[in-house]
Length: 296
Ligand SMILES: O=c1[nH]c(=O)c2[nH]c(=O)[nH]c2[nH]1
Image (cartoon, rainbow, N blue to C red):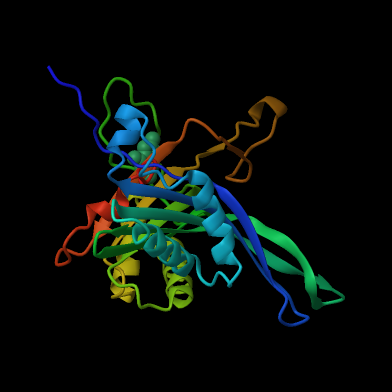
């Protein structure tokens, strides 16, 4: 019985880089968390401790900072620059994956005027990009995590089967809340990534709001469908959405009624609804998704 090295990749995870554009008195900043992974022939490093093929993770980290010196641009563009560089650097490096998280900063307003160089972190939502260069092919996944949304009505859940452990009451009106993680794939790289991101994010939000929900599964599908209907640039959307349960709190012990006013926002356990919504006429690109932790 033989033993061999299977699929492998290595790189520097979570390089935190902040780049300030001071070219005008009105500064701008980008705040990124960048992770690189290289693929190729690194067998000897694993099986013999021979590092002749190992572009160090330290050099990968330095490259991220060096490339940020020339301006970062959109997260997808920064990922493409880095992934192309790594994949082209040595003949034995056949592919590179660069994942970028982008944290937003809003200007602080002073007396109603947005300040030139003072910012506050905007919410918990994070914009993401994952770029994979694999031989001659390039793949871009855009996305977001922790887009937290809630509807106070317009959500029902009923019609499910009842076994001996099913205790959930059917409801014709409940709070629906989730934290959206979405990734979507562009089959091209010559796009206005800022415009596309804003449009897709808007489509996700509008579909969440406008869909009268009979299940979070239905809302998720409607959100993916809205993106694909509006944006021909998008080949598929993968969504992961926890059902952030809000249970009506029983106030009867204090002699109070509760006509759908006071809820307990439970943080766990939570339902977790996940799906791919895709075009049936676009070939799949599983390599674009390789190495993404979790479902998305
Ligand atoms: O939208 C929902 N989908 C489910 O699958 C489910 N299961 C559950 O207990 N509540 C809900 N809500």
